[in-house]
Amino acid sequence: MRIKFALAGALAALVAAGAVQAQDFKPRIVRFGYGLVDDSNQGRAARFFAKEVEKATGGKMKVRAIGNASLGSDTQMQQALIGGAQEMMVGSTATLVGIAPQMALWDTPFLINNTKEADALLDGPVGERVKATLEPKGMVGLVYWENGFRNLTNNKHPVAKLEDMNGIKLRVMQNNVFLDSFKALGANAVPLPFSELFTALETKAVDGQENPYNTVLSSKFYEVQKYLTVTNHVYSPWILTVSKKWWDGLTKDEQKVLMEAAKKSREFERQDTRAEAAKALADLKQKGMVVNELSAAEADRMRAKLTSVHASVANGVGQDLWKQTQDELKKLR
Ligand code: TF8
Image 1 (cartoon, protein in one colour):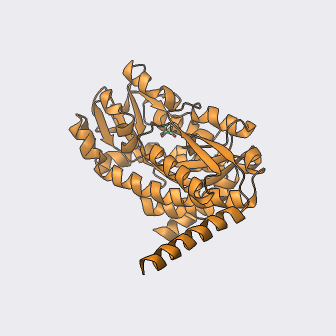
Image 2 (spheres, protein in one colour; image 1 turned 90 degrees about the horizontal axis):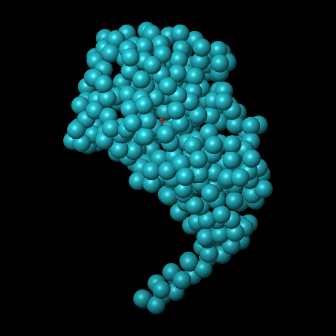
Image 3 (spheres, rainbow, N blue to C red; image 1 turned 90 degrees about the vertical axis):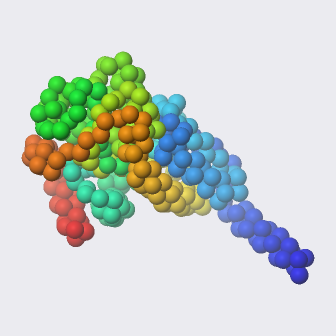
């Protein structure tokens, strides 16, 4: 009986190895860069992806997940992908707007209300349509990951009402929608790459920033920021992208493996991020942050200030895409 099982097991392993080998895989190294620290939701999902690809190619394709912006800031890595000097990255869609203007859709404040809407919109026709705009620019978008709902932190005072934004020197991503949004709210918005953010906060070059709880935790912003205001002002996606130059040289089997691993990593990443976010606020309080929630009335006042931003996003991404997005959201609500 035992021997029978052992034999069956060995046979199954042989068949599996054979199946991997029968596919067309070349020995390759994939440099996969990201901006956050290794011990972050981004880092964990990048390593998950790397393992999936190695497994599926019998170790032929080796993915080197390299965090901490060691390969460069988001915008530097994007250029490296376009030029073919780097194979892969994950980063904010917001830093891609200079290359693919439709990405600005995701920067619309208060566009998405919850993760159900986020998943449906990003993984559905609207998400695909926006993602497809990368290809003519030299990148291929694989899948969206969750960065998350963004919240405000600062070192000056609690932000309980709209007027409290006045005079806060706030780091924003290098993106006009974010710049315009926070200017409209009265903050002194300063665009900076994420890789320079911790130092800017530490040296008080800026007073505050906005990011999901997960990042405030993993990047240790709680060490240099006192106040956290729950604003959920926008849902930020991350996007996995590869160099189109490199992608076009891969075999069909390799492309398939990468796409499948990307989809599995999306599942893993969203679960991990949501689980971490659900308890992050308690962790941040415990680390000494002073947390306040914006009242519904103040949130409404902020929304009212942002209506002009909505109009300019609609213009920038095109009325047709804007309408498709609103129609999809209506169906979901
Ligand atoms: C930001 C983003 C960052 C991402 C990351 C480095 O504030 O939210 O988390 O760009 O990939 O810059």
